[in-house]
Amino acid sequence: MLELNELLDIFNAGDALVMDEEAADACNYYSIEAQKITCELNYNFHDFDERRELFSKLIGKELDDEFRVFTPFFTDFGKNIHLGKNVFINAGCKFQDQGGIYIGDDVLIGHNVVMATLNHDENPKNRANLIAAPIRIGNKVWIGSNATILPGVTIGDGAIIAAGAVVTKDVEECSIVAGVPAKFIRKVKTDE
Image (cartoon, rainbow, N blue to C red):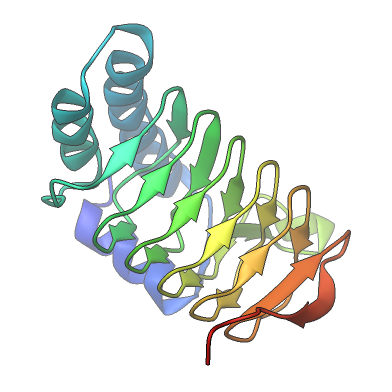
């Protein structure tokens, strides 16, 4: 079975993960590990300190005291989530983080947001292979409920993603996008 650091090296390089027995065993193992933690997080009552502790265990990193997550929260990996300070994740979010999810400071994530970092090979012969690409979210971003962020997307500082948007391309800083697929609506109004 692949070790965690080997698996992360493949995913972070953006190389296709050929789903042979060794890779499948590793993906299944880390998925079960994540499910154990998210089951504890989701199906028992925990105050915010306990949730932060469980989320830290899930991602393998310490979180600041301002981190908040409302449950349920779902991930099938968890080890490639990177959070800045003062992040808020609302209920029902689903993070597929094998390719890496990088979230900046002061980010607000609405109900039922999906972040998916994996794709499959277009060729039917290789369809089981996984191709990872990171999602990068800047500082002070607001992601509305039921938005979906797809692999390889970068969202600039101060951007707003409207509820229900499907983000397939990068979003410039201080921009508002909406729709399926998400399109530029206007720049964010600021005091400057």
